Structure formats: structure tokens, C-alpha cells
Length: 313
Image (cartoon, rainbow, N blue to C red; front, side, top):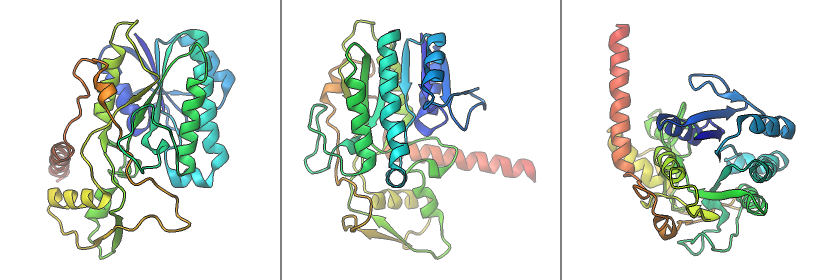
């Protein structure tokens, strides 16, 4: 099977690329500013509609996993036009190409399409995003699903963690830097919003299993995927401090809602998963434990650092 992954230099896109490649599929990763590298990512500006159309016509993929997006709410608020082009116009164009060329398009969306007032949310629940990021992702969903004849589906996921080139690439991974900062700086950490951090590796493997189903298998227009363990960011910091064996007195819980003027964020956007489980994907959801993964990951990172230190001695 031929698979194309957009945003393949990102935290989720790189995991999706690796999962399909390791499963034996002919996999091409697309990137804009971070092309090349060990995955030999192909440089392509997704805003260049002619170049995108020409590339996909030549590649003739069976599946396209569209991970590329402006994913940071604060950045989206500062550049609404650019965010709308990337989060709405690009997936709309890909859906039109899905119809024309016959490939399956999976548009990665977000739990931020909901306002967080009445969880858990079923896939058919009315959307009501609170910020521009959520609005553009919701509008991207509507654009993709509005192309009659496209073989397209939306996969909504929550906040992500997993292997990353830099901790700043993930809203969860970056909390490690906060916990490790023992310089005397103090951090007020969100203890208001409940999140369901989900591992990019689990999502990637699920997508491979989803694509492996028979060609005629039912693929609903909207699919939810999420881990089920709830945390606030403050609670994640406490967990990281315990795993790292460092003090956490410099991190202060903040249980107040976002103040006026701040980018609004929904309080609890838990995704209902029964419909996803009922798809009968081999291996089910396959989500792993949050603490267990981080314990193993940090142990591996410590071991690698020790080996590197010994080699340079």
C-alpha cells in the first residue's frame, strides 16, 4: 500500500510515518521547512495547490494521513489568516484530490472542537470551539466532510506526547523542562483543565491497523481516539517530579479558569470511544499507560546519556 504522511517532521507525523514504514508500506513523508533527514522527507509547500496536485497525481497514494497543521492555540490567535489557510484550505484541497484520485484521506483533528462543558463527547456531538485554533480545525472538518464523493474521515485526538526532537514540540513533553528547572524560578501550572494525554506511537499504530482492514470496511466520517487517563498539567508535573526524583515546590497549582484576555481553553473535552471500539480494528485502541511509558522512556534516556558520557570520558 502507498501511504503519504503530511507534517511528517512533527511529533505525530513522524510517528505515523515510522509506523507505516515499519509495517512494510511504501511510505512518503512530506515536510515544508524540515525536509530531508533520516526519513528522506519530501519538501512540499501544502499551500501551493498546483504543486500538491501534481505531486499526488504522480504518487497515486492509497491513503493520505494529513497531520500538518497549526496546532498551537496562542500562535493561531496571532496569525488567524495563516492558520485558516493551513487548517482549513489545505484539507479542503486534499479532500477534493481524494475525490479525484480515489485515495483515502484521514484528517487529524482535535478535541478542541468542543467547549468542554458536557463531556464525554460522542463523534456526532455538536461542536462549539472556544478559540481560533479549535474553530479552524472544526472548519477543516466541515470542509473535508463536505466534499461529496471524497473517501475522507476525521480522526479527533487530544493533547499528544511521545518521542520528540525537542520537549517544546509537545505541550506535555515540555513540562519535563519545567520540572527539571531547579534554578529557583517559580511556575504557576494549570490545575483547571482536565486533559487526556495520548501517545503518538499508539495513534500511529492504530492508524496502521485501521488502514489494514478490508477495502470495503466501514469507515465512519468522524472517529475518536484517546487515552482515558485524566490529568491536569499540574498533576503531570507532580508525576514527572516523582519519576525524576526532584523537588516540585517551585511549581504552584493554578485552579482558576483562563483570565480575561488569555486564549480560552475548554475545561474537559473527553472523547467518547465506544464507536471507535466497535469498528473492530485488530488490537482495539491499544493505548498504553501514561506513567508506564514515561518511566520506561526516561530510564532509556538516562541510560543513553550515561553511555554517551562514558564514551566521551
